[in-house]
Length: 292
Ligand SMILES: NC(=O)c1ccc[n+]([C@@H]2O[C@H](COP(=O)([O-])OP(=O)(O)OC[C@H]3O[C@@H](n4cnc5c(N)ncnc54)[C@H](O)[C@@H]3O)[C@@H](O)[C@H]2O)c1
Image (cartoon, rainbow, N blue to C red):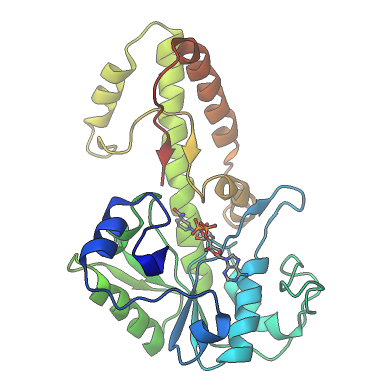
């Protein structure tokens, strides 16, 4: 679809750019074709939260890393997938000793298990992706910030490439340790989930006491410390990254004095049930989901 200049996802700006801009872009499913000669390989493969193992499934990242190491080991790999805190450091320390996956898909071991000290693969950076679903291109053209998880010349160079591709000027750039960059992504997601859960709780309270939610939200949000953005009660937090992030709070909470994210899990389903009970009989034509 991309080679025919069709966006495979719903994204207004993306389709507009594909249709109207003279892009130097070619999509391929051939790994050798994609990786050969590349200076950078951006890895944005799925990292679904596996409820059975209670862990992110990072197998697809490791499979790409293995392929790049085989085809073009001098390429700098930039992980844009959402990963657990500490993942990149562990990958750098032990990737090369991983046993090959029986189906050739890469590693299936949770990090920390079965990994020894192997040859490091230093050509890997982590750079969190903050785009929202449906606004992928817009958010890359107008990034709130650029974070690269390494303090180095090549990290600076990668950040400069992202700046160069953006429309927005004066984008804040942070070069950090890889684990700090991973924590930035997960804490930001967790804050947004908490904010949705907070306004859901407010809404549940208002509805169960016969109060007007909007009046209360307006009054609360006029405090500049709170602000009037991102304050719609909804069915819960959504988007590709959300379901796994509060779960991933558990590793985070161990790191920061057991700050519990449990209210996220109780508040959001409660609001969802209330909204369903209140609105489903009315057969609405559309729903609004909160997403980021
Ligand atoms: N979608 C978002 O809004 C968003 C925002 C921020 C971060 N992220 C993170 O980005 C990552 C990808 O999310 P997505 O929504 O783009 O997922 P997606 O499932 O829509 O796309 C993933 C792509 O990876 C490809 N892929 C899968 N396994 C592969 C492999 N072994 N080798 C090569 N390619 C492979 C798939 O073909 C697909 O094109 C996830 O870690 C997600 O948490 C997503």
